[in-house]
Image (cartoon, rainbow over all chains, first blue to last red; front, side):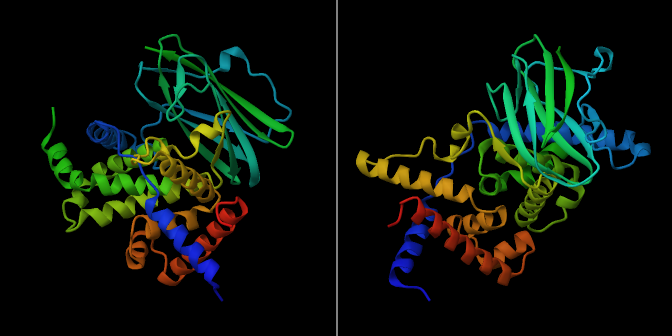
Length: 178
Length: 178
């Protein structure tokens, strides 16, 4: 049963919630989003047609799939230079890369750390050279899309490290900027 | 150059931009995620233009598609929580640029309470946070939340009750309420 204090607090909470602000979209954002949607939407439609033979599992708009058997190899083994995959992205143009982690079992509280070279940023994290997620992994394939943006033409290597307890796996990706 | 499809698409979706952007923000809680969600919705909707033109009320349809995109994303990364070296700067970016009044002391107190509310909201589960924000902040009716989420009204009521109770508990513990 509610007492008067709780009723008063509920009213205050509801008043606070009503007052909880939300910023406007930045100037020009809607126009840019619309242009990107029509370009990307058209591109995906074309890709869907082209990629019919590959089945629906491969989503359009992907720059690259990095596939790792996360718990197949432990401890971590160094990857040979020759095996480092790479992509080329245009300056200041966001590009999505999909990392695929295959895990033999469902795992809670795994951490994924992405380290970025100077001049490469993750969308939404301007200026940050390292971003870490805590995430759960399902048994089987787990997909992580990373949206990268080149802010300078120098390029470099992106490292994505997945850790759980004392086990881990690092992916390297060479990013060149055109 | 805009194609006839592009023009038709813009005519259908642009009237709903403000509402959709607000929904994206309330679902995700941060600008970068909200903008990604909004963008993904437009791309997806563009791919379904043939369906969209046949719908009498595109607004609710677009909202449902956005909600489903949000849920799909959360399922893939069930416990996606950012922990970065600049975590403090990420939280509550909705409070940046909060408009002031003529009373700086009052503004300061309001900002402080809203920051605490913001922190408390971030401690709720997605299910509770979304329901309380849609209902108490955005003013959605229970039936509108049901149409959006597909969740029965009884469950929505229960989540709303629990969310408010949890907010009260957090705000008492942090000293916002005595």
